[in-house]
Length: 606
Ligand SMILES: Nc1ncnc2c1ncn2[C@@H]1O[C@H](COP(=O)(O)OP(=O)(O)OP(=O)(O)O)[C@@H](O)[C@H]1O
Image (cartoon, rainbow, N blue to C red; front, side):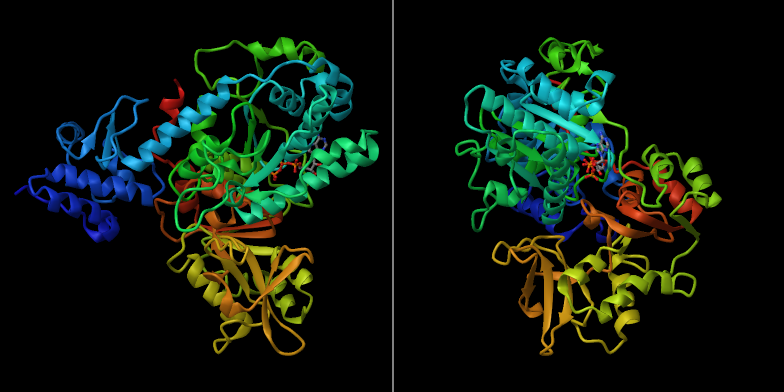
């Protein structure tokens, strides 16, 4: 019988990952120990947000890796195993083999197929070029929507390129005008269809979470309002624009009891344009299913900030697509002639053989009003991993709205306690659910970890105690809740935030945003899985914004700390940000990328 090298639980191994290795060993006791270890780690990799195990760097998954095989003999053992398929990149992996090896990447079969199918879907969309008919006739409307178009304006370039692409990425940091650009583009598409005598385009807006979908719809409405009032645009063009944005689950149509959706390649989405916001949060399986469900000839536009944390689930999908689609600074050469009536003579980049090249425009200029927060230099230092720069900005304490609490590990200690709790204390005297939900967004503690003294779970419990006492009820007036699973029955989704309020009759009610009244009431005991929400991990805060963000980093460095985590946390703040960390831990975080193993980038090179 072969030697078995189970991973120690404290080295990162999980029971669920060992189960696959155990099954393989039971089915074939002669299975090589290196294959069993590969199976266990390929499964663990998914749990940690990777698409595969990279035989060259198992240390991304486990701390004690010195007992692990060397890449070469490991690869050879895997290649020789009956449990491992080695198909060509475009080939479907056999369904009866649980693992797939491609180069040094060992996948669970299902995830390798998600990658292969996603790439096939993206290349299908990228290869379709919409007809250029009617673009020149859009020039007067285009000039009204983008008055800076002839001055090398990136937003105008993005909207113009969208007329020439079925697949487009519009990337940029917060407030760079991604939504503003899309609102104008949708009007252009409606006008183009009108001029061609065609039906108005059917447009869908989607986002990975309910919160992100709500924010997307609200910011689209905000962008459209001044256009309607000031720009003398045919009012009927606005009718084609959707009023709401949906979660991707809802858009694709969840089917009970499975991972499949109502809409897929065989029953595609009935839309001509699908716009997805917060694309950095979309994981590999979801992006695969979304792309496959976009029908032949329809457009998919992905909006996102590639410098934010990748999705918690397997992937780093946006980063791979961004890498494959070029810098996005200039128009691709082939699109220029058709767009000249809109943009004039503009610089371009030569076409390359890479199939995704020229499918991205990157917006750099920030437009959002500062509201007293001077965040940009710090966010930029964090984004670029510039530890010295970030620390000197923080230590100088000169950026308005930015506060640094060096070596501060207890937000509830005297130095910060009352400033932290002040907005939430107000909830005690509020009876109106809408007002309470607005207060809920004033402040949030964001953590790198869930567990531990600086983790979200303990901090939440301590904040709740500080607000309502040690003998508090489970649901006290003013308690913030966060839903932690999707429940279509309730219309509540992972990450939705609610507030508990006792009504005049003394009944405790949990209120969430939404519905025709703007708020929806639930009995707390009838809610789907949920927890406290005064503190949450940075991951959970993606797609949301708060007036004041408290970023609490742990006392010790941890693998989950990264520049993307710090950047994402900082850019959640609207008015003030408090960074609580040691110099060493912050520096360590900024040197690290939220690295995810994935074969998407090389697959997309074509
Ligand atoms: N070209 C522009 N000129 C003036 N203001 C602009 C311009 N583009 C965007 N803005 C303003 O900047 C703010 C942010 O724009 P928008 O919401 O479109 O950015 P975003 O990139 O979608 O942000 P986020 O990623 O945070 O959702 C809005 O108030 C918008 O009106």
